Amino acid sequence: MKPADVRAKTDDELAGEIDILGKEIFNLRFQRANGQLENTARVRQVRRDIARIKTILGERRRKAS
Image (cartoon, rainbow, N blue to C red):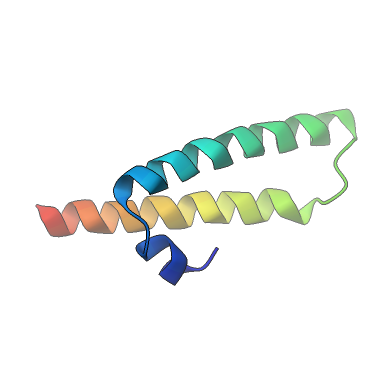
C-alpha cells in the first residue's frame, strides 16, 4: 500500500483497514509460531502498512487541531 493510496481514503476507511491488518498480523504470527508460514515477508509488509496508516491518521489529527 502506497502513501497516496492511504491519503485517498477517509478516516473511517483507514480505521477499518487497521482492524483488518491487525487480524492478519495476528494470524501471520500464529502461523509463524506453528511453522506454517510460507511468505515470511508478508509479516513485515503488514507491519509497515499499519505504521503507514497510523502515521497518516496522526498527521490528520495534528492538522485538525
